[in-house]
Amino acid sequence: MNQFTARKPFFFALAGAILVACTPDVAIAPNDAEFVSPYERGVQLDLVNPGESEPFVPLASSAACAVGGKAEQIVLPTGYVQTVVAREGEGLLDNGDMHTLNETGPEKGRFLYRTHENGSGAGVSVTDLKTGISRVLAQRADWERFDGIAWTPWGTILAAEETDPSGAKDPTLPNSVGGHVYEINPTTGEATVRGAIGARSHEGLRFDKQGNLYGISEAGPGFIYKFVPDRPRDLSSGQLYAMKLIDDQGDRTGVGEWVALDRDAVVINSQAEAQAKGATGYARPEDIEIGTSTGNDLRGNSVLYVAVTGEDRVLAIDLTPQNQPQGRVVVSDYVREGVNAPADFDFPDNLALDQHGNLYITEDPGGSAPAKTLGDDVWFAPFNPQSATQSLPIRRFFSITDCNAEPTGIYVSPSGKTLFVNIQHRGGSDPRDLSIAVTRMQDASFQRSR
Image 1 (tube, rainbow, N blue to C red):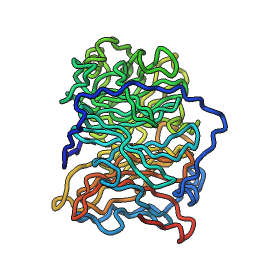
Image 2: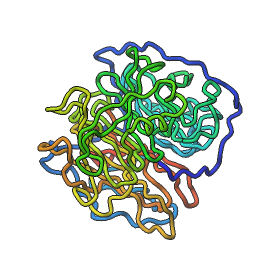
Image 3: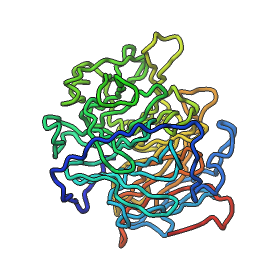
C-alpha cells in the first residue's frame, strides 16, 4: 500500500528501547486443537470445486461511493455477510494493514494479528476472537510503516517495514538504508530485527514447504527475493537471492533463476544489491502468496503469486517447473488486464488464497472524493484446472462504499471459512479503520455486529 497518509502520527514513549530477541522453540504437534471461531459458523467460502462454477453471483460493477461510505461499508454478493471484528481506538492503532492468524500451535486460529502502517510508532495488534478483546502487541518509535505479516512454521510472527529510505534507524543497524523484517514473540511482543533478510521496502512475506522465505522490494524497480536460512527455523543468517530472467519471452515473463546477493551488502541495501546483480525489476510488486501460506498444502504450492501493482497484473512464478534445471523458475501472467481481467481491474495490491487455490485480489488505485465516485474492489480469480499459471476470468467479489477507503490485508483463514480484510483510510464523521470478517451466511441469525 503506498497511499499512506499519517492522520495522527504517534510517538511511542520508549523512543530508544530495543526489544530483546525472543524466538521460542515452539513444538508443533501434528494434531493441534483448533479454536472454532465465532466467525466460522457459516459454511465454506468456496462451496464448489474450482473451475466448475462460481460460489457467488459476481457484482456487475464497482459500488457507488461517498465520503464515509454507506451503512453497509462494503457491498457483498447475495449470501455473504460482513462483521466488524475490531475498530481503531478500541485496542487498535490506526492504519491497520495486513492480517494473519496463529496458524499452528494450541488453539490455532484464535488470535488475529495485524500490522499498522504508521509513519512512526508502527506496530502489531492482536484480537482474541474468543473474547473479542483487541490490544497492541508490540510497538516502537523507530518502527515505520509495518505492512507485511506472516506466521512462521515455528510459531512466531514476522512483521515488515514498507519504507526506503527509512527515516528512523534501528539502533542495532544504523547504517541500513531501507526497512527491516522483525521476528516477534506472539505472546510477549518481544522482537528482534532479522537483518539478513535484507533492508528494503518490504511488503508480502511467505514461506514455502522447505522453510525458504519469499519477499519483494516495492521501490522501483521492484525485485522478487528468496531467503534461504543457514539453519532451519532460524532467520538470523542465510543467503538472500533475487530473481533474474535469463530467457525473457515478453514483458519480463519467461525462464529465470535465483541470483545470489552479497550477504553484507543486503543488510545495508538489498534493493541496490539486487539491481547491481542484474535482477529483473517490475513496477511496484507488493503482496505475494503461495499455497503453503496458511499452513496447508494447497493447490499451487509450488507457484508463487506476485501482485505487480503498477502494471495491473499478478505474476505466477513456478518454483519447480518441468523440463528446467533445478533452481530455475518460469514466470507467467496469472491475471492481467485485457487477458483474463476487465479494463477496470486497477492496481492489484493484496493477495489471499483459499483452500481450492482460488485467489482473492484487492485494489489500491488511490484517489478520494469528489474526483472518485466508485469504490475499490476485491476480485476473485478462480483456479484453472487446465493451467496452474493462468487463472480463469476473474470476477468482482465485493466493493467498498467509502470513496476515501481502500481494502488491505486480505487473508483467508486456514479453515477456508472466513476472509479477513482491513478497511483503511476511511472518511466521514467516523473515520476509524475497521477490521472486517467476511463469511458465507448459513442463515439469517448469523448476522452480528459490534
